[in-house]
Length: 139
Image (cartoon, rainbow, N blue to C red; front, side, top):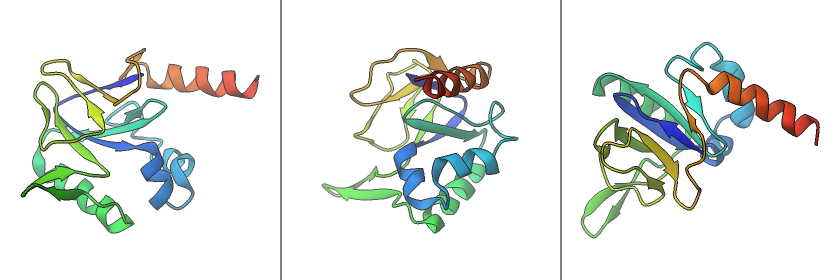
């Protein structure tokens, strides 16, 4: 799967949320239920949160840093995203990010090594979530 990008997107692998958010991603979804389908959506691997301006993104980054995520790493004298990634909707990552795939003007991102599959966005996230929960409960 892939997540749609809008304006400026903060992408976080769900496994990283599980590491630092008390109660993991399941609790994150409960705590942020009002935002899901508005500025937050996710696939099996990635969470997308976002904003229209950098000021809001910086607040989000600071919150995740305070929770324990390492935002950037230094590689050959320049910063690269480490446990999060900020992307522009049409231009891709704001810094290099070796775990994400987002082609120029594709308006989507996916975890490297994962097929594109269905694109998750604000309009279909709740349908996909309901399908996944029903599918896994019936397995």
